[in-house]
Length: 56
Image 1 (cartoon, rainbow, N blue to C red):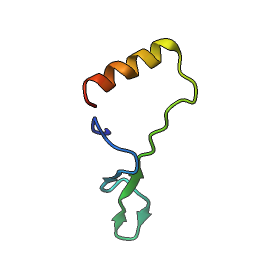
Image 2 (spheres, rainbow, N blue to C red):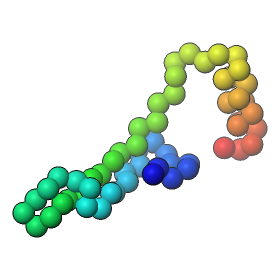
Image 3 (cartoon, rainbow, N blue to C red):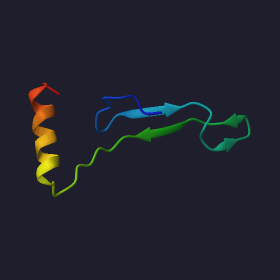
């Protein structure tokens, strides 16, 4: 589960969820990449403006 508010480039470690080794499983490292759509509808733009007003 990715925590709310996670920023682009954040690394999250999942212990014991990586590749199998002789001594057990390694850790899986996930790097978050946030990507916004290139084109936004009027409604989407309005919602982003609302978020902007809240200080996020």
